[in-house]
Length: 352
Image 1 (cartoon, rainbow, N blue to C red):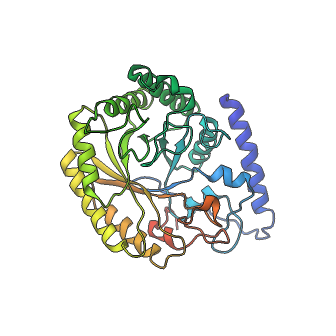
Image 2: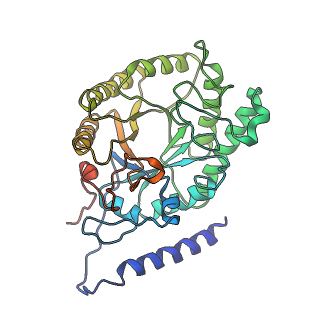
Image 3: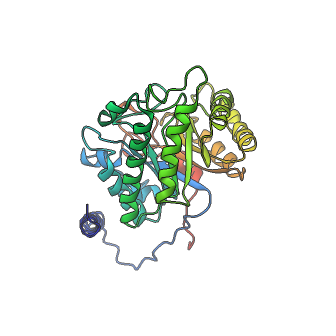
């Protein structure tokens, strides 16, 4: 997509949105345009489902019940960063390169900082599956060609963003790669980390070639369980893997949230010291209707902010509501209004 076309398309879309959201407002009193501080500790939201939700007709409302653009609403609720996943050739286009570009452009116009989360798959990559993209199946036994495919895909997506004037601050090389990526070639088995390290490094080097100052993340789930992290990162370090940040996921439940958060906060400091790097919570979430969700988030935000070794915390798909894709750990209620979970972020307004 040419940059000029993208700009024209998105400008028209935003103008229409602004008109529709303001046309019913009869208050003519001049309003001071708020100014936002989007620096420092990352207070983030993964908004990867947003465009698909909008296309399906989902609406979002602020606490007063007024319809509002979701990404703007999240900024007003205190986020200063967004996380966007990338799939290689998704069947329906959602989370593909062009969809990522649209969301990243919208984030840029709001001043949000951006994390790009490469799954290196045509669909979900997580601890239970790390499926090779259909277009790469001929390379399933060829490490050299698979590394080249990883590098090419990484450069292609990031160059598209950079050519459209979009800065990227963090880049995930794989998603929740507890036992490696691009199975079976990059599967870590029998404590053999070499293939996974090589594939990771192909992505790392490609990312740095486009955004030299971006911080690259290796992301593992179960942030409250230290053993999986030390096993993985000890093995990767020995195999020569490259990373700048260790990423964590944490999904507490009502019956363990106190201990899970205590353990995760302790693990952040342990890992930062052991591997001499920064740590970030790349995903966190709890059932939207849990009476403990807001307290959990407040504890985690305050605990992470108190640790200089922690760069930030990202809530996973807070905009989800109404049983969207059977996911119930968003931060909006069944009517599309935000819950109190994101109150933990505070706000970014500096000219109150």
